[in-house]
Image (cartoon, rainbow, N blue to C red; front, top):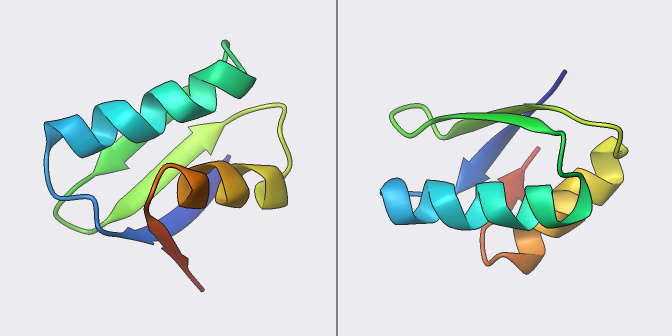
Length: 64
């Protein structure tokens, strides 16, 4: 499982956008988002770098 600190996710629509973006690349990925902490966790066949790129391409900032 990879965990990311993501800035800019503030609502359910943001969660859906990031989840859809990840599922477009890995339909079987499990995605969990905690809006309060800004953390996104995912189980995926994609690399951490690929996941970070997908999150950023969706319009959000991966921190750290």
